[in-house]
Length: 160
Image (tube, rainbow, N blue to C red; front, side, top):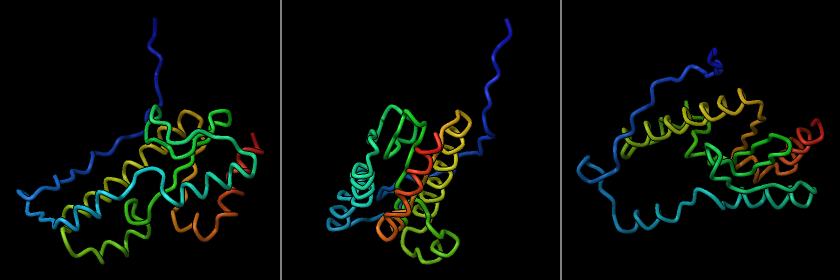
């Protein structure tokens, strides 16, 4: 019996991210620690705005499906559509220009954000091979151009 061959994309070596700890020279104040603890991975304002707009447009969806790799923000299983709302800083918007502006803990943040970018590409490839449509919106796109984002989602849903 022959093994079924899977289409797997070439996987690049993972970018190593140094641990964020005082032993590595990363010192945090109590205020910095408090600020970082308030950063959310789900339930962000742009994500909520897009979900509400899709709901009003009649698109029913699942939110933050943890069973799926990458934990998509919006999942429409019926249409094999996943939507991610990415934060500009965390996912490297305009990365070639922005990386020059990072001054403190540079080694950590550069590798951290580059690994996030790499992971986003891996997740996109994983789902596209399986026939899913992946849409990624920047947080500022959702904030400034909500209608255009909803329109893109509706185009995929209508084409199904």
